[in-house]
Length: 287
Image 1: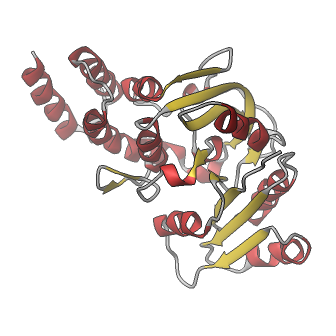
Image 2: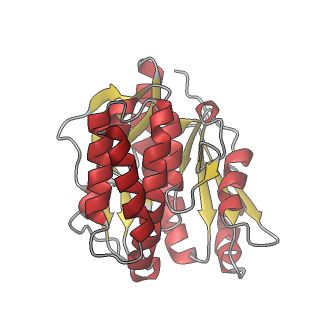
């Protein structure tokens, strides 16, 4: 059986405890041919200390400590160092199901023109216990399905909501992502870096949505979710507009629906007056 190499890449930062859990979930994969690339952007040596026993026991783990903080550059470094045909980011506070890689690689190997495979992701708390989904992590479909990539992208864009999944959730073919992670139409997105890359991939082919939970998204206080959500909203309008060049939101009705949805999401937020004016100007050109 042909088992192409899969690179599991981890941009680590100051979370040795949850990183250990993430690494264990990568090592427990039933898929037999993986490498684990860890690029450490930490401000101390705690991650390195935790990893020493792993590095002595597991040759498939490759560890790199950055001399200075690379921030988004650390994501690019992970990508560049990966040798696999397929690549899956793993956030240092998330967890893989043990069959994640095997079940996702299957679709690439057995079906044509697949550019992205994702799944339902189970939300967990700081202790690793399952908690109810947040809005974005609701199960998208009750059954596994192969669908047009543009159609899946349109669902996310029309809701200003990443229903596709965080970096941990998605497996893709490395060669298909020709732009650095998070770069879309020449712009480096910061908090929508995953959506930016998913749109790049979805514009190239079909997507697979697997209805079972193959990854676990950890929610914890250190994420500062409220501030991140506000900052991420400032990027959604730009990515909605830019996506039309790739065939997303290809009808005026779809485009209007996405703009109206975004406008609804910022009602009552005084920090977005410019976005409201931009939307009004765009809508006037479409009438």
